[in-house]
Length: 110
Image (cartoon, rainbow, N blue to C red; front, side):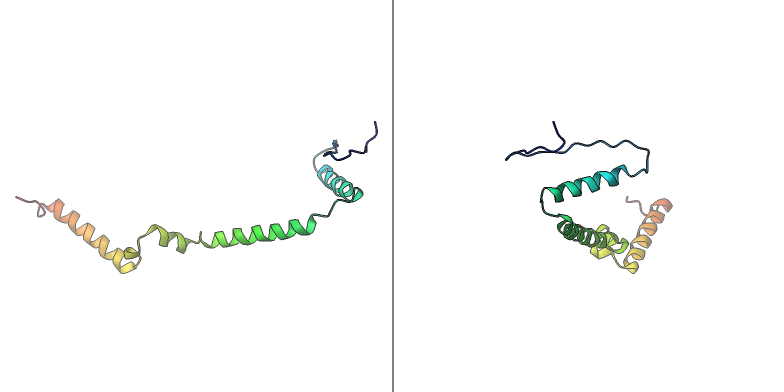
């Protein structure tokens, strides 16, 4: 049984194992072997297609990051009626004045 055999019309695979220490180039060797095997059997080079797909994915990720800016997140969390600083201050003053009225007893109903 040889390393390369005719497969006919079915699918085939190449199984290879590489021994070595970390950083010795096992992954690079496996990639080079896979690329060389594809070229040997006349299969198309997928590199240009993969680069286009990766560029599209990167563009989508970058556009998604724009929606995660602090300003965009703040605008989605705070209702439109409360986005102004003045409105936030007025709301805070109203809250504290009501709390002070309740604490002093002037806010009780008889």
